Length: 81
Image (cartoon, rainbow, N blue to C red; front, side, top):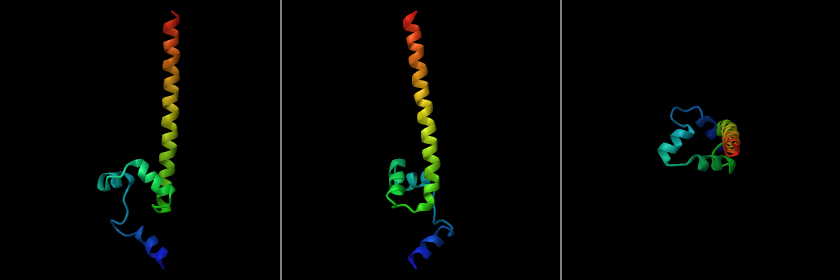
């Protein structure tokens, strides 16, 4: 019975909120939200958003690593001249 009530909550106006709203309204950090999803403290439906965030994080980390490599190469070129 509890599962039915939880599932129907997803369709009630005002019963859901985005991760950004959770951060603003409840003072949660993004890490706390992700940890809540991983620990199953936040319902599974939110995990789809989390997967997108993880993909974006991976892309940002890759970009940051590439930038660091390019800057290191540029620095090496300048030092060799």
